[in-house]
Image 1 (cartoon, rainbow, N blue to C red):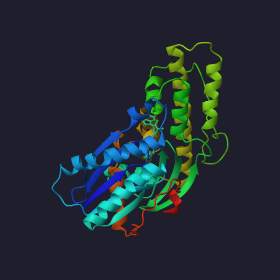
Image 2: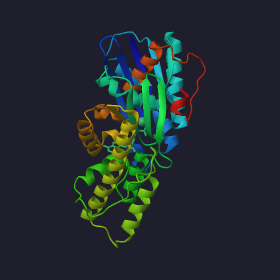
Image 3: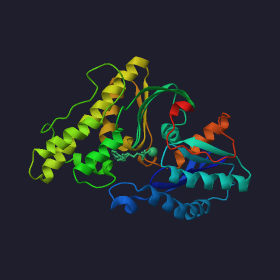
Image 4: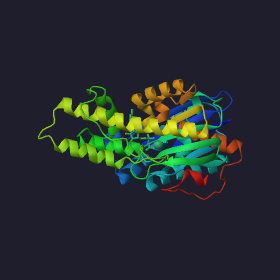
Length: 333
Ligand code: KG4
Ligand code: ZN
């Protein structure tokens, strides 16, 4: 079976075809970074308009790579920017109607959650998943496809959001997470120290907004910040975010008595996080399951794959209406 995936929830236009027989995926991503960079963040109206312009040529290019028939169309129905979601949803529904194939509404975070299975189709359930993206930080008990229990989440900023806001504060541009992480590699350890929020009390929730304020206060102690100081601050900040995530993962793994940890979402592309969690799982005699970096950030391969899994289990919403949701809890699935 060949499932076309369409992702337009934020600032990437992405299309993919998942071929279930060979467990292979072909995918294309058009990034809007140059479009939004000069504004220092995503401008929703510009994002929607760009999705409209890009989606048809991008799909034509992808379909040009295959002679196979498309059997279903999966699209991101939320959460995300409403105008951007509407472009992908309308496009996907229309294609499915024209081709007379099912269309499947996919939750963006379920897409992220399942992305490591593109690499490891035999990844054993149940497992703990840490989902870290620009909009969400979630610790999820994953019993099976579509069977999720929330163990913890951020009570304020998501990890990616904190990275992006701190990068902006340090004058690093957009999107900040990857730039900040790169700069941190040049930083000297132990010159600055930031707190590990909510780790001194029980529970699995996160809070990252205070960290950004701590960075602001540190920058205010300098009249002018030189490059090395900026890198040292970035280093301490990434250390604090990564340590906090590692502490909460350790706690959740022990609580659930799980040996398998999946991390997914844009921040899971971060090399420091990948390294620290790899050694944590080695210490715990468990295993860390990761998607390749291009499937950590937004892509349509994960949407096609999640759509395929939903269709297999009769979990697909076959309603012909176009329903998109800017806010949508994973637990409603
Ligand atoms: O999953 P994603 O691509 O989009 C959302 O669903 O939000 O995640 C985007 C987030 C942004 O905050 C971005 O700064 C962060 O992921 N990010 C990274 C890296 N690449 C993307 N953060 C740290 N290190 C990276 N290499
Ligand atoms: Zn995402």
